[in-house]
Picture 1: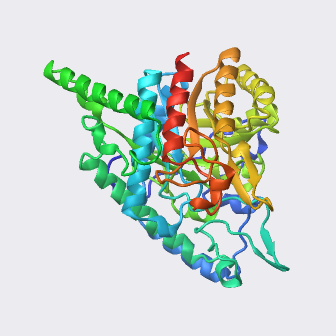
Picture 2: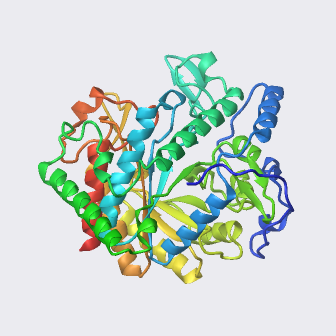
Picture 3: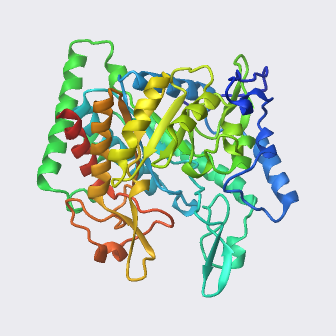
Length: 474
């Protein structure tokens, strides 16, 4: 990523309409979503305070630049043609308290390590996208939560309210929009500083090792394979430089991009603006915003907002999705079928992927829509654990199984799986069971930190990268 660039207001632009999608024919503005039904709507009790926070947020500098967004769009277009592979990973929901250098560095390191494994296995460049610097909101299955006869608003992430179960904490607070912005800005500033200082230099991948790599129980064979691979990479770069190859700088330079779910439209629209000498509106809170399974109703507020921005947009697609509705959705979001603009993230679940995914792939292929297919093997495989079913977990084998089923389905249909979307952390947590580390359900309480969904820990994430890379190679 490059540094911040100055942005000013420029000429307006309205996206082209599509005849079979009436919602796209109407005038669009960053606030036009407010006239539509909002799924996962946040009920802010103090409207004046909300207006004040949104106005302040609108006046603050952007978090990312339009040039960075355009660069990511270009890379996604190449991935759509099978020339690159997208790795998207990070926390299920960031917390403001986790905005610390050790946490951020650990996330970058595991993504770097995984991408190196995938480069080696897939023999193609990797697009690295972190679920950070903005992933502060989470959709919930219910707007309220009840405990012991008391019912309060659900915890929607630190962008909205706080996790403790009391009335004050769970009250939606618009000041958190500003707090989340400032924490995202600090996170991005630190990431850019690390990259600019050579943190991600491929000449020295040995510097990416996490502090507990030797103690985390990683299988000796995997540890040896990883170290051997990094040594080979460093030696190859040195050889190319000795030959005077002018492309080595490009090969050794690592780019990072950010992503988060665009759940809270007050936050997203407040940072949506025009840029000098460019047409269109840009969401400058992140490079790749995505639309969740619960908010992708084609006539709803989220689609109304996302159809008007120039960013590439990802959409989560579950097992119950109607393929015809997905095509309609694509037409609304990308009516001109521009390359690099549409990412479809399938999240079917290991129990349903083999049956539900192929018809979807075939239908979209027949529609000739340009999309990048990405597999999210996490969200369809959440299960309840514990005596009272109060602990959420995921099984490593289910996650791997869905990736393998997805690879096979694309091979049968003749489409291209171009990415993988994982909830993971660089920390040594115990939230998902399985993997070579042997975490069982009895171990979950040892170091379960997530306030929302279970994440792969460092060891599980790196092992997943190895197994997926090998599976692509077979």
